[in-house]
Length: 172
Image 1 (cartoon, rainbow, N blue to C red):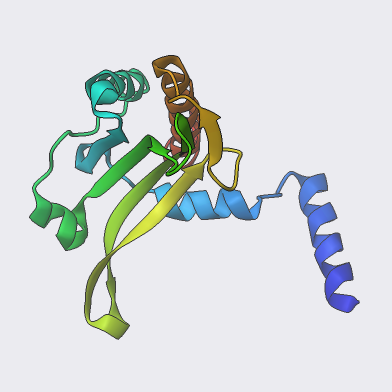
Image 2: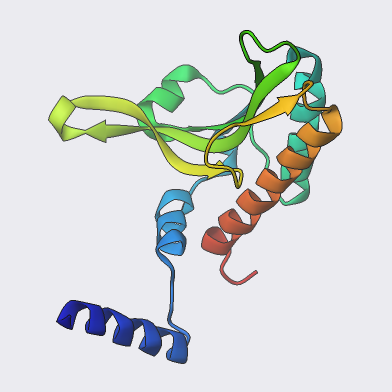
């Protein structure tokens, strides 16, 4: 009971004084703070016929926001922990036994290599993650249209850009 009351009081005090930061905000701050976009490699995983179009759209949106990822970074740089991979997946998977039905989920993640003492080496990890409002992939009849893929891409990029700028450009 004491812990709950203390938590509620801290929350009220934080809200009243304008000091409230959500757990999500703290996680985003630690995950995106200091990421330099000249060290970010962009990958779009989607249907091959849309890959070039969606990659160009993502590069344009990021560049417009002042963020310019690379399309190819030396693997050694990334594996040494000096680079990141921004992976955007917009991929419908055909459902076996259900013609013209697809399992579709979209996500965006920032991957990096981190050193872990317990394994005495670097391992890849996801330091920032965005998933659509659905917790599980949803079933769609017919493959998603290019317009749907573009809408999902735009939404993820807009959220990412807002969060990135919030922790890296506090004055803006």
